[in-house]
Length: 350
Image (tube, rainbow, N blue to C red; front, side):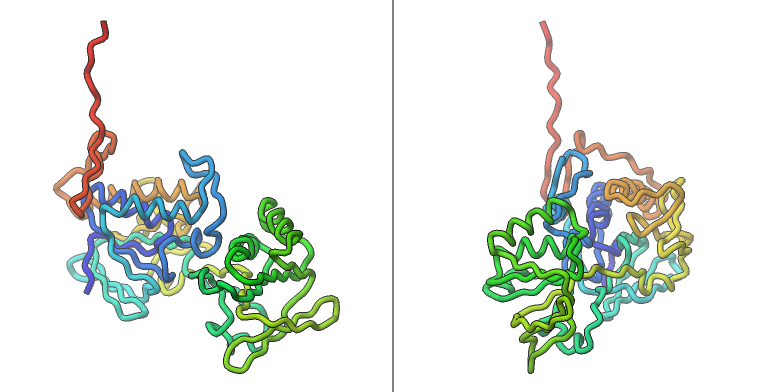
């Protein structure tokens, strides 16, 4: 049984920043996420994509934002259950909750912060008859370790940001990258389209459009794909086929917990603390909904800060939380590390 002050469901930017805000108030956090690594959509969908609306960063790569957040919360030493999905929720007599995951992990907590972004993700799969035969055996829907493609032939299918970004990135690692799209036009960022065009012109990426993959071949693992281009069939040898047609967001088992749901999002009280209709359970970030909701990372950061002060009051009903100005107090981590705030000097001016 894992015991924690706050269970954070979702390891995206909002979930990670919650650890920091909770840590300032001396509350420990455990993070649960169905993905195998922290970062949420930023790491799974567009790790190399620039983000322009993070305060103080005119531009920051999505993956670098996650690295910065992980560095920021390191002093508060959160624990993790990654690659696991929250399955069941039990509310106990003392007001605490017990959550069981699909891997059998049990977590005891008095506060739950659902920060699951758009929910759990299911890859949108192409309609290829024998696709399932090669899943995890040459067919991948997410890229977790780019180094596995070193000196390999990789076929990527898709026309959005994820397909373009990974084609660009893997062009420096793989022996050959082939990008296939069913249209001539791509719907990704103009900068990414231009980069792919340059790599195509230099011979580092092969682009085949309009075309669609119709079948896969191989005995024990994927060996080749068959594509249709203008009615003509072409077989291409490959080591990997990565269809990147997006992810389908779903709330998953959380939708059966008795929470108020509206348009696949969790309704919260935004006039106070982003608490759901179940006391002790909050929803922050893109997973929640309320009048005037803006689905921005910035909004999630604000909601996390407000939610943590409410959670502190629930855990410490006899204490009043004070706003922690880190410019005054510094950051004192659970691991003993201390970042002291620089003290102002009182000087006489003649």
